[in-house]
Image (tube, rainbow, N blue to C red):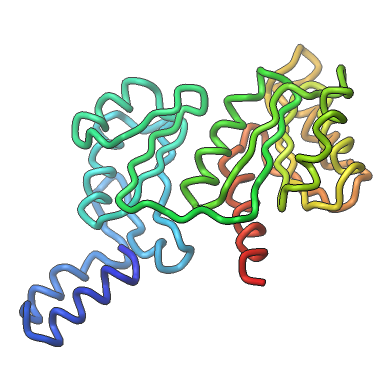
Length: 252
C-alpha cells in the first residue's frame, strides 16, 4: 500500500464517501499482516519505496501463493526471487499478468507502470555462467525503477572484450560486476572507471573456488577504490544498493 492509496482512503472519509469504520478496516493491516507462517510487511512501501520482496526458496508453493494474494489485495507490486517454474505456474493461475525470468528465477507482477531513471545501472558478468545472478539483479533494478544495460561474458580471460566496451562504463551511473572463479573482473573494472561499483561473487567455478568463497575474498581484498562487495550470488542485494545510488543522481 503506497501513499497515494492511503490518501485516496482518507479523502473518501473526508468527503463522506465511505464510513470511518470502513476506512479503519482498510487500514488495519497497514503495518503488517499476520497470516500464521508469515508476517507480511505492508508498511515497507512507505518506509523504503518498494513493497516486501518474496524470497521463494524454502517456502512451499501454497505459502508463496497466499503471500502474493494478500499483497495483491493491497495493490502492491510483486517481486519474487528464487522461484522455480512450478511456483510461477501457481502464481500465474491467480494473476495472468505474472511474468517469469527463467534465468534469473524471478516473478514480477506490476500494478502500475514505472517511469525508469535517466541514469543507468550497468550489469557486467565475467562469464555466461554468471548470467542467472545478473538477470536477478536486472529484474530487481528495473522493478525498483532504474534503467539498466547488460554486458555479459567479458571476463579477464579475454579482457579485450571489456576494453572494446569502455564507453558503456563511462555512460553508466552505477556498475554491478558479477564474477565467479577468481573474481578478478571487479578489480579490473574498478581500475577503469570512477563510477561506484557493486561487486557480486558467484558460486560458479571449480573445487578451490569453494562455491564462491575465493571470489568473495578476492573482491573484499580489492585494491580498486570505490568498490563494495555483497554476498555470494546476491544479485538482488546488489541491485537494491545500486538503485539507491542511482536515484541520488536523479535528484540533482
